[in-house]
Image (cartoon, rainbow over all chains, first blue to last red; front, side, top):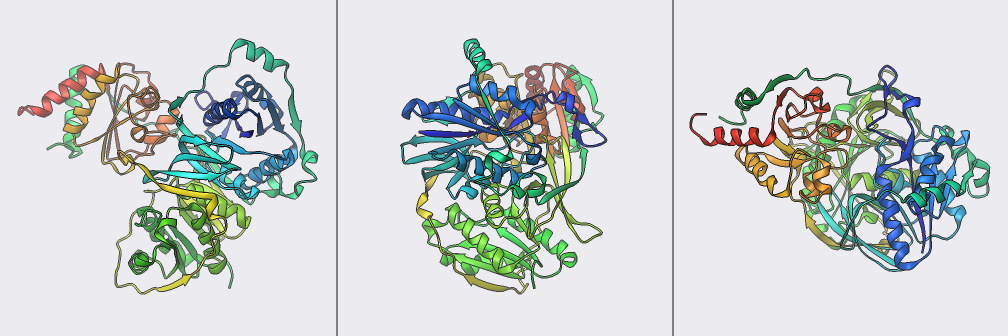
Length: 269
Length: 328
């Protein structure tokens, strides 16, 4: 099976610092790593490859300094890593990003399944997977919590629709966006740290960097980056700056304080 | 006339319209004087429910209801809903399309945006019309750390909106509205087969009034019982942070946070949760937050109204005792 994994290099959300005034990430604090949701896509890709053979190709669109994240992907089991990096790709919203990713997949030629995380920790949209599928004219399913079965032609998954989990069968090729935790058949999928030997191998591996010209025969360059993005951020600010100035108490005094709060809020009579 | 009015996608894959769709109709009514045109609702439904659903959508604020009827079996098929929403947009040519940011809505709406080549903004917390008459969408990013205001240069403006951010309007069953029945071809519906419900949700945390949430401070799976008992005594829902789901101690439906549920109950009690940014993103809008933690430097302290420094087992037991005894 030819498996494509979409990987977004994102800043580590637990370490990143924000410019409170401008509402942007402080660049120096933002080392890029694999979006945590996408780690599950890599793990599932490996399991599918184990069953059917084939190759895993990852595609990322990011600035050049995202390269270590792609080496991490190789260390974790991706066979071929493509980094779409070009000033002409910069400033892309979900529509332009999806258009560019879809063009890249078309350029690759044959594929059986595309896997990605349900959303990214920086963009938070969950929109790119479905948009890529639309541009490629293939079915997709998002918020997948379990892969029940897979054959060369079809995949059966359990997906969260909101009110309940539904069992859905898709004909391949299709795009599957994974939640976490996710179950592959009966087994909980847990991303593991790559082995040292794999990290060393990944250091020597080649990360293919593609610019906009590499897609000239499959895409319209005016649809890349900011130029191809219909949405514009007009204002942004840091949302968590205000704390609540908690009242801090200890031990048994705390029990009394909680009971009083419960009464004031009408939770207990 | 083109690109006028507001179209609300009424989410109905189960036979009943999701409450968030009605919230969006309420918002649409509020915005429509500044946008101009009509408030449309588009709904996919089975034949038997056409009248009931149309009446409901009109009562909650739609001027015109665009109805697509399908066989019961195809109701939960996303391919049908995608085609219907594209059809409704090309018919109504609205300025703004609002879709509930449920997992279902966040799966359908982006496909539609890509199909018609327009911009879409995800998981909005607000939508307003600025002094230039432009639609502005307000959304969180970076796991809730950043709030961005976004404009869309193409038509229609499309947004998925987080359920619960707008109040549920009072339905008025005397409102008059027009029902437009349209047909949608279903290309390639056989590429996606919805086989049925595989599992109901254990709980809908987003609707809970009181939540008792536990985290890493809990030492074993057996210990969860103690906190379950506390939740029960408070008529609260038991919830947790991600590690407990990862360890298999709790069901994923009970996870609060960026990869779980976003909640805003009247009271949120966090026991042994340090407050990773992903967790804070899921509960920071709760009306009153109590944190019990052994560590006063835990990040959750900053986001709480009342912080008790102590052992969560000790405090939970004492609370249970007090709640059960008459002295309280």
